[in-house]
Image (cartoon, rainbow, N blue to C red; front, side, top):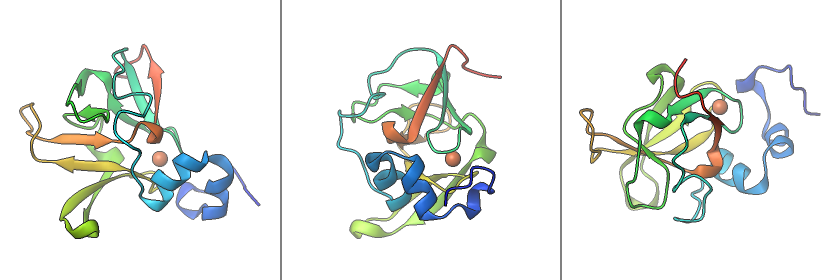
Length: 139
Ligand code: FE
């Protein structure tokens, strides 16, 4: 049974399947990828804070969002580095760096070393893993 008071890392996959949409479950719990140019945020330009769609953690500010042309929402850096976890991903015959929500362990997307900002990083994130909190770009 889903217990909302259970600590996030201890939630079972059955818990998550009851609180996420099927697309969100596939991307966030099975490390899937939504098709490019299909998500709700790749062409989003409103100001605000993008939160984890699973747990609400503050992940990315609209201030770091840029148009990458990839069809996925892209950011130069997280709102708070401590809120994301970076994990080596050797699936699909590539070596990539997976981005996860630190609080709940959900898959968000990948980070690539070809970003436009001073950090040189591009956080390529699935729209369905995010929930925009409009109007509040930073605390
Ligand atoms: Fe989360």
